[in-house]
Amino acid sequence: MLRAVVLIAAFALLVYSLTAVFKYWDFTEAPVDIAALMTKTIKLTDLEAQIEASIQSDNPEDARMYLSLAKTFGYSLDAARFIPQIEALETPWQVTRRQATQFANGFIDGSGETGAGVAGAVTADFTVIGDARDLYEQYQNLQAGKDVNELMTALAGVGVGLTAITVLSAGSTAPIKTGSSTLKLATRANKLSPKMQSVLLKQATDLFDYKAFLLATRGEKNLDNLRQAAVKAYNPKALEALSETAEQVNSIRKSTSLVDTLDILRYAESADDLRRLEKLSVKYGSETKGILKFLGKSAIGTVRLLRHATELVVAALASLVSLLASLIALSAWLRPKTA
Image 1: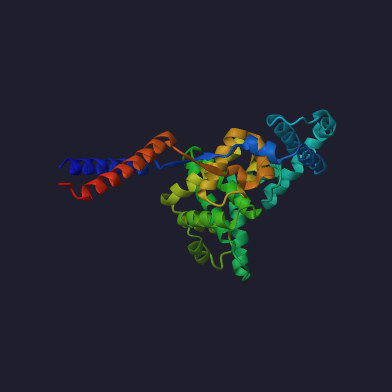
Image 2: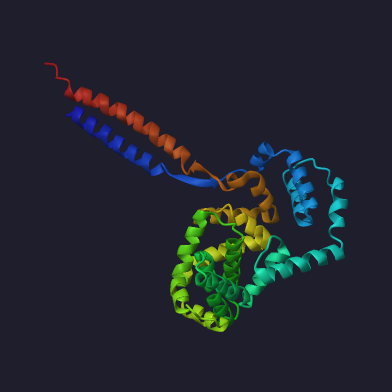
């Protein structure tokens, strides 16, 4: 009788401890140590080369960003060596010349590789000029038998609908509109990965039926009629999925800048990547672009950590002890009793 009781008790303890092991076998994802990665893999000469390249390309903003990056991560960089060259690019005349040209180019053709250029393109979108321009461009491609950029068409249609909502809502959807316009600009500049384009296309086409729009406008010549057709193809009930993505993009923009956001978005291949990029940008602000330039996607990598490491070790030891006890008790129970 005693042997049976011991066996049952040992087996019960084994079951309980194994249950605890499975309970505590729980991992969480933690961001990688950016500072350790930077100091381990990036040399001072790498930073200096990027500063010099930025100066040569008439980009004092990036040059200062790399100077800031060096300071953040403790590099012994001689800033005085570069400051005079940077300041020469920041005179009122140079700034006005650079920004005027870039803004005009962005407003007219939707291009944007600089802050002013991106601002021009997004400003055009807020006046519906940019979205109507892009819809008409894709419509002309269809009429000419050329390839239609589905994502560009869908995002432009979404932009038309969001502009109307932004006006009616007194600007409450403006962050979503800004994020959507930035995504469209990234599409035009070919900054989005194929996987991210697929994610966005699904979200955007749920919101804007671009196929119905193109069918309804076949043969149409009036730009205003095209815009009205776009409004009809817009389904505001499907806004939730794209609005989350657009708001994350807008959050990155607020933490960095419009032009940096375009560069940052190319590292996103999924909704999870975008979420991690948002967190990275909130932490490092304008330095995010430089970090990604050096570290690539490893900057948004994660490491798996046990949530309850101590409890798991205790449960594992208890399982081992109870297993041994169960085997001993079973052996004793099966052994014939002596007379």
